[in-house]
Image 1 (tube, helix red, strand yellow):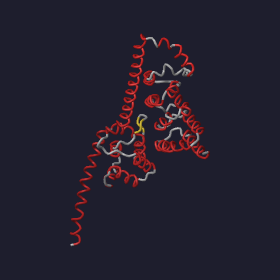
Image 2 (tube, helix red, strand yellow; image 1 turned 30 degrees about the horizontal axis):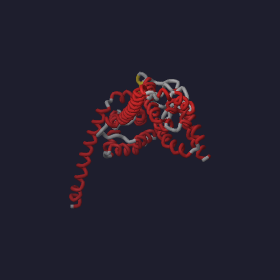
Image 3 (cartoon, rainbow, N blue to C red; image 1 turned 90 degrees about the vertical axis):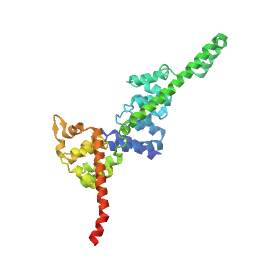
Image 4 (tube, helix red, strand yellow; image 1 turned 45 degrees about the vertical axis):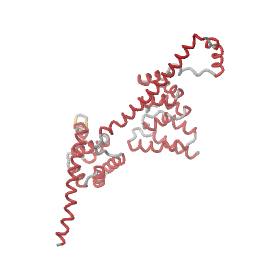
Length: 324
């Protein structure tokens, strides 16, 4: 356990030292953190979470994972971390209970959306005062027993029960709507690209790596695999020395702008030049429409399939002629 604690803290310390972590570094940290966290002691978990509470670069999945931990561990993170989005804070408050909501209320800044959600949960009114002891609750109940027994108060109790039932149903409905909105926002980009070829995270990482290493052959092979097309098509795209065709391809398959610009500037040196403080690669990227790029890439892939199929079909017919 001690060795696993050391590994967890070393991983967190290494991540803290990264001023501007890259996407692969963020992805690697997200993959490592959860299993190391689960294998560590409670004290190591608290220290790791307290350290990450100061970081602005904690991946969203890791931030949400930490926020859902028991309050003894997650309190500092919930009250301080800038990595928690409003959607995450609202979901945590609604699903994890009053203790987590109290920690969220202690944040220096809360957006109107989060405040409205807390008010809707009817928790913000009681977050600043501790729950009354059981003995005090019993005393209050005993002192008011005579009044509660009065027949004329029966309608009030019915109204109160109905009010709490309606409030519970409203909270459940609000939670369902929040979850739906989060799911829609996360899948919006995927839905827009329905039917289009989309780069996978592994392919994106490989394309970026080979471009930075200036391994054109490996880059062309990975690009053809990404497009599910022939090597001839990927080479033809790369041979456009303006970089326009490769930019169209990268945007058409849904690649991130940061990695795309890095690839373009590595393979086409002139795109690193700045015009008015903006690189030529960024200017080129902004001029391209993603939907149009997607349609153009699909047209290239269809033409490539037809050409490749024709060549494949012609090959068996040619062999008998040569042997004859």
